[in-house]
Length: 225
Image 1: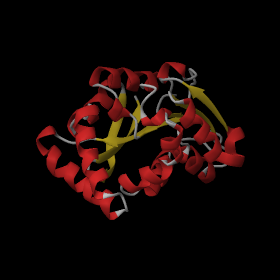
Image 2: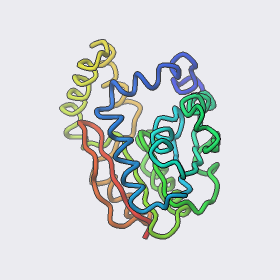
Image 3: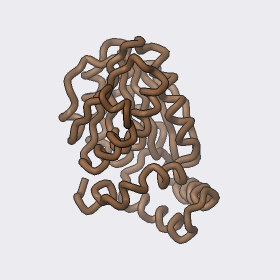
């Protein structure tokens, strides 16, 4: 990411949790659902990889729900990783945080992995390569949970407008919510849900299932084939 983006801006990072909860419908429930899906197949002493771990919200949710799990969290922003450590608080000793991208993650093998609100930043080829790198680091049959913006280009205006309306209903100023529509169109290489699901299969995941859908966001679980 560019150092000028909000993930490297200390003031923007400080507001990350509050801002994200206002624009992602059911954010806390998303973390709960993701953790439950991972726990279906991950052991009680699982080693879990979290890609895009900056902020630490999913790390903290998983750690509270599963006291035996240990984590490796990866994120390209040092500021966001500092926020993750602060969010984890007394749970921080259970997580090792790595600055970088998927290539900075340990080889594992991991019992489970999650990548939430991250893949929509990656162009298709990079997204496919990242999913393949995640798959390589997992044990056979291990689950991966992903969730991010995913909508068909022909339906973009309708769904982005709905997502902006949710943000306004959650307390985001209307002008800011409207400007986010243009930002998503211009900056995010969003794919259609069918393509997102296909990429998971191409990367070596089986039993891919949709578990979360909230306006512009979709989430899937799949298992290393």
